[in-house]
Image (cartoon, rainbow, N blue to C red; front, side, top):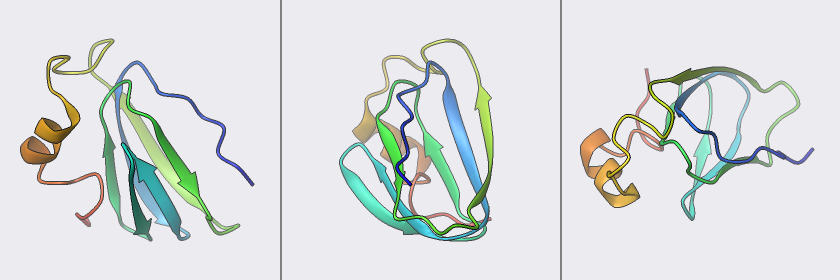
Amino acid sequence: MPDPQTPHTRDEIYVVIRGTGDFSCAGEHRKFGPHDFLFVPAGMEHRFENFSDDLALWVFFYGPEGGEAEEVIWSDAFARYGRLAFENRL
């Protein structure tokens, strides 16, 4: 099943409860699984791909329209958040 979402106007966090798949964000692709924490800055293209039928996520939208720091570019966000979008686990 494809993921038809478009970029959102607020920063968002996904917490993977169950399931596995691939997460694409800003041209990078990573595997994800239970307990992964995925950060996506406002306005960033992102997509869940090749995910299992049992995928369950919590999603949190927060902060002002345009994100916490509109001037932060994606590479700065990686530096600022320690590549949370792809590597940290709870």
